Image (tube, rainbow, N blue to C red; front, side, top):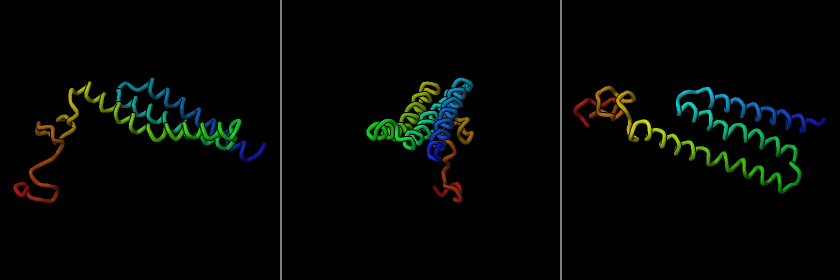
Length: 127
Protein backbone atom coordinates (compact mmCIF):
# COMPACT_ATOMS: atom_id res chain seq x y z
CA UNK A 1 0.00 0.00 0.00
CA UNK A 2 1.46 3.34 -1.05
CA UNK A 3 1.79 6.42 1.12
CA UNK A 4 -0.73 8.24 -1.09
CA UNK A 5 -3.29 5.50 -0.53
CA UNK A 6 -2.73 5.59 3.25
CA UNK A 7 -3.10 9.39 3.27
CA UNK A 8 -6.31 9.10 1.23
CA UNK A 9 -7.70 6.48 3.60
CA UNK A 10 -6.84 8.62 6.63
CA UNK A 11 -8.46 11.70 5.04
CA UNK A 12 -11.57 9.67 4.18
CA UNK A 13 -11.83 8.25 7.71
CA UNK A 14 -11.35 11.73 9.21
CA UNK A 15 -14.00 13.15 6.87
CA UNK A 16 -16.52 10.47 7.79
CA UNK A 17 -15.73 10.93 11.49
CA UNK A 18 -16.19 14.70 11.14
CA UNK A 19 -19.57 14.13 9.50
CA UNK A 20 -20.63 11.79 12.30
CA UNK A 21 -19.56 14.29 14.97
CA UNK A 22 -21.50 17.05 13.20
CA UNK A 23 -24.60 14.85 12.94
CA UNK A 24 -24.41 14.02 16.65
CA UNK A 25 -23.88 17.73 17.40
CA UNK A 26 -26.98 18.72 15.42
CA UNK A 27 -28.97 16.03 17.21
CA UNK A 28 -27.58 16.85 20.67
CA UNK A 29 -27.79 20.66 20.75
CA UNK A 30 -30.98 22.34 21.93
CA UNK A 31 -30.58 25.83 20.51
CA UNK A 32 -31.06 26.50 16.82
CA UNK A 33 -27.85 28.51 16.63
CA UNK A 34 -25.79 25.74 18.24
CA UNK A 35 -27.31 23.29 15.78
CA UNK A 36 -26.47 25.64 12.94
CA UNK A 37 -22.85 25.72 14.11
CA UNK A 38 -22.59 21.95 13.75
CA UNK A 39 -24.49 21.94 10.46
CA UNK A 40 -22.08 24.53 9.04
CA UNK A 41 -19.08 22.49 10.09
CA UNK A 42 -20.70 19.44 8.52
CA UNK A 43 -20.90 21.32 5.24
CA UNK A 44 -17.25 22.28 5.31
CA UNK A 45 -14.93 20.01 7.29
CA UNK A 46 -16.19 16.62 6.14
CA UNK A 47 -16.53 17.46 2.44
CA UNK A 48 -13.05 19.02 2.35
CA UNK A 49 -11.47 15.92 3.89
CA UNK A 50 -13.45 13.62 1.62
CA UNK A 51 -12.52 15.82 -1.36
CA UNK A 52 -8.84 15.53 -0.39
CA UNK A 53 -9.26 11.76 -0.31
CA UNK A 54 -10.88 11.79 -3.75
CA UNK A 55 -8.10 14.00 -5.12
CA UNK A 56 -5.42 11.67 -3.74
CA UNK A 57 -6.97 8.50 -5.13
CA UNK A 58 -7.93 9.99 -8.48
CA UNK A 59 -11.57 8.81 -8.25
CA UNK A 60 -12.50 6.67 -11.27
CA UNK A 61 -11.52 9.13 -13.98
CA UNK A 62 -10.03 12.62 -14.29
CA UNK A 63 -13.45 14.09 -15.05
CA UNK A 64 -14.89 12.40 -11.94
CA UNK A 65 -12.12 13.90 -9.84
CA UNK A 66 -12.78 17.36 -11.27
CA UNK A 67 -16.51 16.99 -10.60
CA UNK A 68 -15.91 15.86 -7.02
CA UNK A 69 -13.53 18.75 -6.35
CA UNK A 70 -15.93 21.22 -7.97
CA UNK A 71 -18.72 19.97 -5.69
CA UNK A 72 -16.42 20.35 -2.68
CA UNK A 73 -15.49 23.88 -3.74
CA UNK A 74 -19.16 24.70 -4.27
CA UNK A 75 -19.98 23.58 -0.71
CA UNK A 76 -17.06 25.44 0.83
CA UNK A 77 -17.78 28.69 -1.02
CA UNK A 78 -21.54 28.78 -0.48
CA UNK A 79 -21.65 27.38 3.06
CA UNK A 80 -21.04 30.77 4.75
CA UNK A 81 -23.80 32.38 2.69
CA UNK A 82 -26.31 29.66 3.53
CA UNK A 83 -25.32 29.60 7.20
CA UNK A 84 -25.64 33.37 7.51
CA UNK A 85 -29.02 33.44 5.76
CA UNK A 86 -30.31 30.61 7.94
CA UNK A 87 -29.08 32.33 11.11
CA UNK A 88 -30.74 35.60 10.09
CA UNK A 89 -34.01 33.80 9.38
CA UNK A 90 -33.84 31.99 12.72
CA UNK A 91 -33.10 35.23 14.56
CA UNK A 92 -36.02 36.91 12.81
CA UNK A 93 -38.35 34.06 13.82
CA UNK A 94 -37.14 33.97 17.43
CA UNK A 95 -36.79 37.70 18.18
CA UNK A 96 -39.13 39.18 15.60
CA UNK A 97 -36.47 41.50 14.22
CA UNK A 98 -32.83 41.54 13.23
CA UNK A 99 -31.70 44.15 15.76
CA UNK A 100 -29.93 43.38 18.99
CA UNK A 101 -31.81 42.60 22.16
CA UNK A 102 -31.14 44.29 25.47
CA UNK A 103 -29.51 41.11 26.78
CA UNK A 104 -26.93 41.46 24.00
CA UNK A 105 -26.59 45.20 24.46
CA UNK A 106 -25.36 47.54 27.09
CA UNK A 107 -28.30 47.23 29.46
CA UNK A 108 -29.95 50.57 28.81
CA UNK A 109 -32.96 49.11 27.02
CA UNK A 110 -32.51 50.81 23.67
CA UNK A 111 -31.19 47.73 21.84
CA UNK A 112 -28.14 49.48 20.46
CA UNK A 113 -25.66 46.92 21.85
CA UNK A 114 -23.37 49.37 23.54
CA UNK A 115 -23.25 52.45 21.35
CA UNK A 116 -23.05 55.59 23.42
CA UNK A 117 -22.92 59.27 22.69
CA UNK A 118 -19.15 59.11 22.24
CA UNK A 119 -16.79 56.53 20.88
CA UNK A 120 -14.35 54.56 22.95
CA UNK A 121 -11.93 56.93 24.62
CA UNK A 122 -14.06 60.02 23.98
CA UNK A 123 -15.97 61.85 26.68
CA UNK A 124 -19.74 61.30 26.84
CA UNK A 125 -20.76 64.69 25.46
CA UNK A 126 -18.37 64.80 22.48
CA UNK A 127 -20.36 62.67 20.02
